[in-house]
Length: 113
Length: 112
View 1 (cartoon, rainbow over the protein chains, first blue to last red):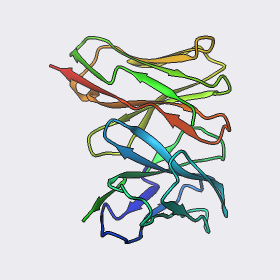
View 2: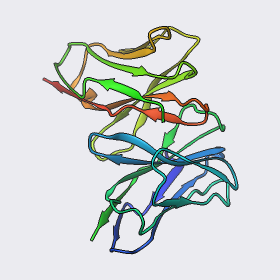
View 3: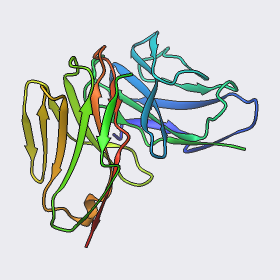
């Protein structure tokens, strides 16, 4: 777990603003994931990336965008198109591109002003 | 995504009793089933996992069973302790094999 970091811990977004959440890992893991967590909703997959310069939409990708220019970094942008962005965002990684043990970052809590 | 149903949503047990959480999945192609524990305000952490070629796995007070025919798997915690209180999530690998689908979680409370 200690090899995955997310920043900031708290983030505030104004109406019409895009904000970017950072996720970095030094575990040399191939795959990285972004989840959104709402009370009583579990973890819902936003985007995932199996290798550099490639990523796929998850179940709730609308209003979000990602990039994977480096193996260790997978930033998530919450765009103004996401009308209900208040949530706890978790980044995760796993060693290979296949679904297996995922290691989570500490999370970013996004709040709307 | 694939549906992973998890029950119950809340569970309260007395210290020393056993706790059982059940999950069902919809796609027979799923082959990896992890369980995560999340304490309040913290990140989820893997506590045990099982693959489809195994029916049961045990690690001290924690065990997981898998019934591939019925497409359900369960988490068993014996001799529960107050520090077991947390939210537990089950997950199943999705049809592509590249991601996990999570259940909605079970909030377990162990009272002294």
